[in-house]
Length: 371
Image 1 (tube, helix red, strand yellow):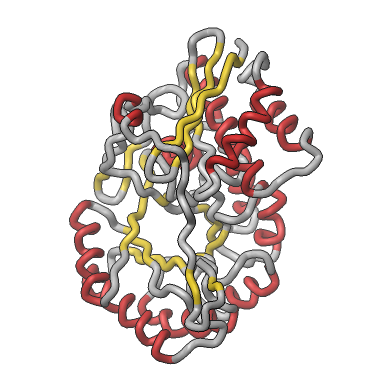
Image 2: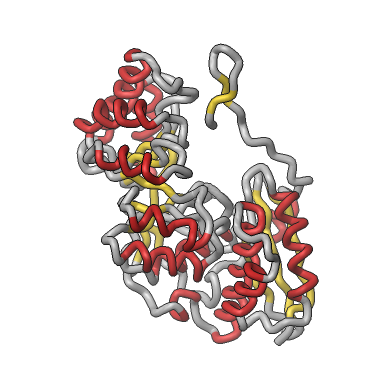
């Protein structure tokens, strides 16, 4: 079998879909989406395409090594997103060639269904509570929210109290049986992360995601040791090497590798195995499209230390057979490869030029804040 060409499609709202063709007529799908930089990633894929065309797509690990190590300059969000989408497509082809799901090729199922969570937002505590109840009524048993925008390195008691009131409103609305996670988006300084965690602890958050930026692992360790709330990070880390120090220093008890950024399915499987040795779990990051979600579910299915899966596409029509939510879980697809088929007629209606800007936040004085 040989790779003959790679097609890519920019799909609204901000996704990049990849379709790998072979001389045997089998095609594989991947999603090298990098939010706000998909056109840059598209060019990186084109550069890899020169190496890939004519190659056997079933030699997945060998091609991963060639793409990663053969560029001399390695790692980072652009190159790793390109490699991730390509790697997903090769697993899809291998599964289709053998007639089995990807998870079967990686050791088989560790669970029969995958728990997922939904995002909620709002402006007032009442809006947060209303939106949370709506998601619970749809069948979700876990939610994630962001409680604040720009936060100063040392901010006011008022900001802390407003965040607590929002979270308290969600907790009172949905009760104790629903898990509620908080995404801090790296917007907090370590000092404010510690203060906010202490204030939120009585309401039992499921986890605190990126309470501060992940570059300084020692600082993350300080935050993690200051609270009983589980700390998560990983969406801005790439490859097993990027996760090594976080895992070894136990800076987070839940890791969130992004299957479209960190290196693809096998690389995230390796990261999960590293985490397992430190009794950490994984909750893959995936605010992306249906191909990325399908790849995540294949990983989740065969990962013993899987916790929960992020998603934003349930209920949307992008697949011929969309994932269905039941009691907070989705069933693991039984089809070969990634187990999905795209509704290409619908996707054609959503193709655009790939322009999508990451929002920017500013402080009152006009200086740039973390988004």
